[in-house]
Length: 339
Image (cartoon, rainbow, N blue to C red; front, side, top):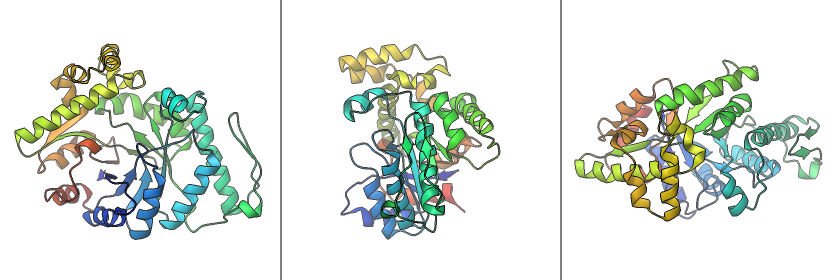
């Protein structure tokens, strides 16, 4: 299992220095999330100042963008990075689609399948001159004149990862994608009994059993060399678990451990704005279930032990991610990413 890193800065002026630093540290992939900033622009900058580290979105929200727009952005990033770019897509939840992006909400799993299939059709047209003739329930693409065709590139096989929590989206990932962005709110039991069987079913349905497929995530960690450090991290993790657990979308992550009744209680407190009260509902057992506790000297081995055979790479979840200038960090990265 490899160690990735979530982008800690989206300042385009300081990104060159930051990207060079994380590459020099030996991280496997630099992931850019769509939260407060556009996820693609920082990767465009990083692509031009790095040579080895992979670059990906974790995630870009799919439905507010036409697949044609996504296709153009990914094509240019694949060229700029010389084949190191990974397009990670997520559906986001209904409220954000309708109220933050003003996008009509439709069943997300079938629509995500079409997004990925449309991307493949568009890229095939550009790379191989295949006639563009994609028609689905949600999207239609059948016009591509030379003026709008960017033409072939040296690295056209752009990996597409899909983010999934529920089994329907995990099956879609298995059917059409190259990997799954596992939500950071996860546990080995959830991965083993809920996520991976759904992905494997999707792979079987598509006749892709045995095809290369990546499972990537970021992990909650209670990390620190002193009890004081770990105590602060533990409270932060409790708050994060409570935040995700209050949303019905993430109920399966609790349900696999028999804690599904916690969701309504957390949701009530979130509506009341009682964030401290939410965290108080998260027990130490839950923290140990969804997070890995350790020091800088042993966290790498604990991550490997917990996720052996379940994940291909992880990152330290952003609120718990140490500064790239922390002198304890190089050892951790080296231990996980030794080649």
